[in-house]
Length: 90
Image (cartoon, rainbow, N blue to C red; front, side, top):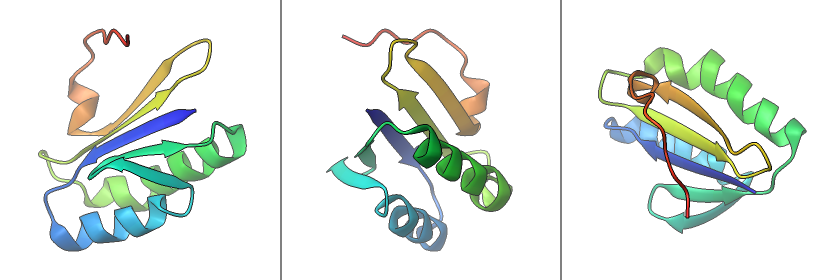
């Protein structure tokens, strides 16, 4: 399972990102989605984030991807890149 969370200030960009993410999973909370854990899906999301959305992010925008596999890898985009502290998931 992949958990994706975002905080995007611009309404138009947030709406576009929301529509894009809805293709892959379902909403748990307003800006938190559960997505089936697949390398193909994760790669598609990360490529689109890097090539389209991240270029439009401001310092207040962020996306975090929690890969809930054995490695529990976390990917950060936008302002979230600046926060590299450890996260404990219970």
